[in-house]
Length: 108
Image 1 (cartoon, helix red, strand yellow):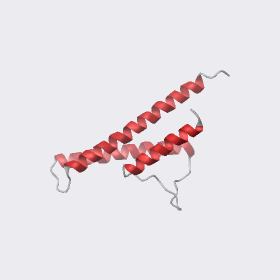
Image 2 (spheres, helix red, strand yellow):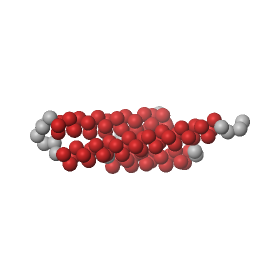
Image 3 (tube, helix red, strand yellow):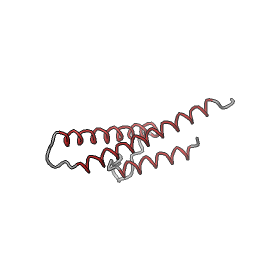
């Protein structure tokens, strides 16, 4: 897997995060923070996925308890957003594992 392919996957993760309402961390100028490189970006993405899941499950629990202001359609949409974010993260993980295996199988 080339660097451009990894950058493409990261861009897809950013778009997914924006579409799910999860804002990526930004610097002072409003641009994504560059500190930490790939590992930091991966960690932020995983934290965003986890946050989306926790938010969706908390909203589902609130709906089950009958709290006012929590509609079923909002709960279902948030659960689906969390699922899409998780599936995207899973696909990124699978591609990273495949890339790692390809690199390990290269002849020295």
